[in-house]
Structure formats: structure tokens, C-alpha cells
Image 1 (cartoon, one colour):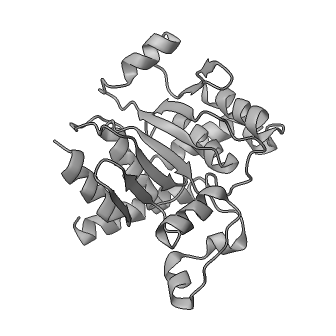
Image 2 (cartoon, helix red, strand yellow):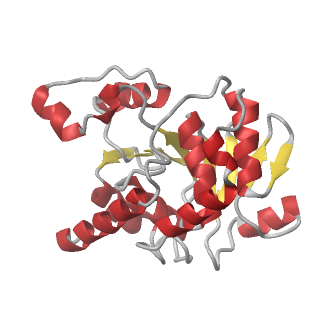
Length: 255
């Protein structure tokens, strides 16, 4: 990827993060973890879908993401079949035999069912959340919205990410456009050590021992926590660095 283009890409992604004032970064893990992984039909740049992904980060919940960009044909028909209409986001929870639309209903459901706690006050001001999420999409008005041709992997990709990571966002946007499903492993920040940037950790030799399960798993797997991190069981490749992952996905699964 051209360095200048990538720099602009990250700059606009950082602007999107700033406009959400910290939502989708911090994690206060859910009391319960679902036995069967949640399934979320959604697409990047949808302000309502963003709210659900923020809640997943906050609760440290993983989900299989089925991207449904505009013009997409892989998973949109499934939503119509399961729920009766093409509306997003759409959550499927096989643990509770629940399938539901409406972002803020989903957020409430996740907090009450898995967080085992009342919906936090900031989530109860629905108009503010919707407006804030919509504003955060302004710096990146098209990314992640429209379908592009791709070849679907046989095995599910894994992506270590958190919603407001400016580096993970371009990767998720491309996966959305390519309609490539993936297992989203949320790696929000909890302890102080989780906030130390990877280059600083490398220079100082700091190896934070995070209490968050996916950060600990990534540290065990890769020797460091650097977001995003992609695992592709189809090719045996694993990699960090946003630009490298984007190029890899285009070359491996693009048409």
C-alpha cells in the first residue's frame, strides 16, 4: 500500500475515533461468556451497527461477523430468511434462541444477558448515541459500505480488534466490502498497561500481563499485543500491521 495513501487512511480513521470520544475502546468484561459464539450480520459505516460493535468491545464479547454491505448477496438473503427483512444490525444468539434487530435493543440485551448488569446511563440516551455514531462516519463516508468482488475463504478468518482502533478499522472495512466473514476477537483496553503503544513497549521491554482474555491469548500467540492482528487458517498466515493485512486480503481473496 502506498505510504501516503495509508497515512491519509489512518488519519481519517483516527478522526472517526476522536468523534466517538472513547466509545469502543475501554473494556469492562461481561460476567458471562456465551457457550456458542454470537453471530452479527452488519456492515461497517452503518451507524447503528457501530453501536453494537462498541458494546461488544465494552463487554469483551466475541462474535462471528457476517458482512452485509450494500449490493451484497452472500449474507443479506440469510437475514431476510431469519428475520423477515433486510435490516441491520441483526444479532443471532443460539445460546438463548434469540434473533433480533434494532441496535439499542441489542445493546441492552447484551448488557443484561451477558454483562449481568443494567444498561449504563450513557447508553440510555439513545438519540445522543445515534447522532454520535453517525458523526463518526463523516470522515470515512464510503469505506466499508459498498460490496466489491472477492473469493470467500473456506475457513473462518480471525481478527483481533477493538471497535475504535484507527488501525483495525480499515481492515474491518475491507472485510465488509469483500463480504468475508470472520471471527471478531475483541481486544479492548482495561488495565493501564493495555494503553501503552506497542512501539513503546518494544523500546522499553515492557510486556504487559493483561487480565483480558483475548489480549492474553494474543500475547501468547504472537509474543506481543498489536492491533489489528489477522489469523488466516486457510493459508497458515498470521500478521499484524494494518497496511500489510489490507494488501494481503486484496491479493489473497480479491477479484
